[in-house]
Amino acid sequence: MTEIPEHLRKRAEEARQKAAGSAAADTPAAPEPSPGDATEGKIPVHLLDRSKAAADQPAAGADPVPTGSGAPAPGSGPDGHNQRLLTVVKSGSIQDTKSVPQDKVHVWPHLLVAEFLAALAVTLFTLLFSIFVNAPLLDLANFNQTPNPSKAPWYFLGLQEMLTMFHPMVAGVTIPGIGLILLIMAPYIDKNPSKAPEDRKFAISLMTVHLMFWAVLVMIGSFFRGPGFNFIFPWNSGLFFEL
Amino acid sequence: MADSNGAKPTGQALAERVQGSQAWGSIFRPGSIFRKGYSDSPRNRSYVIMNSVLYHLHPVKVKRHAVKVSYTLCLGGLSFFLFILLTVTGIFLMFFYRPTAAQAWDDILTLHTAVGFGLLVRNMHRWAAHLMVLSVFLHMARVFYHGAYKPPREFNWVIGVMLLQFTLLLSFTGYLLPWDQLALWAVTVGTNMMGFTPVFGSQVRFVLLGGVEIGTDTLLRWYVLHVLMLPFVTVIFMAIHFWRVRKDGGISGPL
Image 1 (cartoon, each protein chain N blue to C red):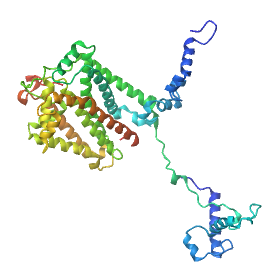
Image 2: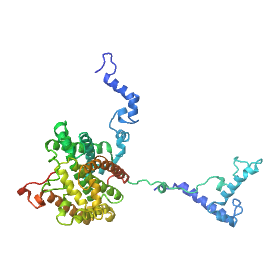
Image 3: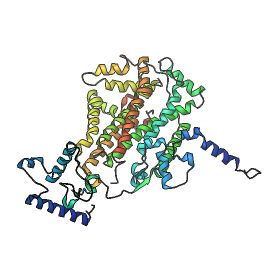
Image 4: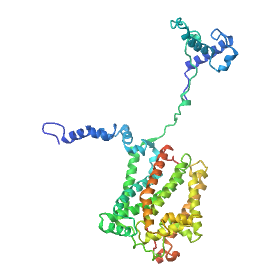
């Protein structure tokens, strides 16, 4: 916080006292503080007078009020100054300055190099993998020949797995629908402000259980389901899985 | 390689002429490192970002913590990069593919056998797609475990879950396009499930298939979804996602 300089504070205090004193003593600076003037709010009477005089000036026309030359204008402030310190606005109240500087690094090179290397690595991985493993292309689509088993893409195999347990409306629509809505609402449901893992045991456990549940269903659907979508062991019956 | 009469080396002279030309100056903004060369200084490090299009994506500086690979595992960035990789390989594939039941499968076979790098690019497209589903999913898990969805980042989480769904839809719509047995029956299983939507089930299925059965209309419909509509929507959501990351104060802080 910025301190108000001592001399400014003193001057303001003196001025305030003087103004209060003059108002109480009904000095010439404020000749007729009529009760009506009180409604004008906090504008000091002598300022009002001064502005009134200034407004009258054009009307006076040929007889201009002598200005400058040391004589204080009628209705000027204390000590003949025509300006005075009304208040000091501390910078903290209008400028939100960060008191704690953050430890920052330049995006170039620190972040861009990491991103570039990551992109390079994943490109290389995809390229090498694609050289050695071909994407599947089975026979031409044939409506009269249903492959056994018919499987959805792997990320939907959890849903297909649930089809063996529930009615299709529950397994295919209700459960994933509710799951998605809960996932979207997570930030609004989880009101715990802390990000520390030790404060979030419940949230973390709940998420982990569901992720694992999902992963296990996908694995079972992918590797442990054979002809007729019956349960098999891949090491006995072989893989029935295409990516 | 200096001239015999002691003039500047031709390479350097040429470089100066090019860099002083109006065309060069119009391409690179004032302060760009390509105008006046790069030497490592804090000022130039800032200029690299400020005077390039990357300024749309990255601020000049980020929290030191934000560049720790062990925190983010690069998963969000990799998802974005895989999206770009998929766009590039996908555009290549579009040159050789016609989305009709009579031609689609043959086109893929031709791509394998008669197009240079056709098989390789198709492989890359396929594997990158699976990888992207995985990386988006893992990105979501990472964000959850870091509690990074908490205020002020709630809405960006919502956008992120939408992006996860778009990723799944992109992958699923692409699944049908080869028009082989795998595509046909995987999509049959998927759309049959969606047909069990309460109340509107058969209508949902009809809209998805462009008819009552999977056929050439379905192929066209899913092709347009796959190559145009879903990428378009995804790009918009990604733009909002990245913008909010910066507006919400960069990635979430250390635990």
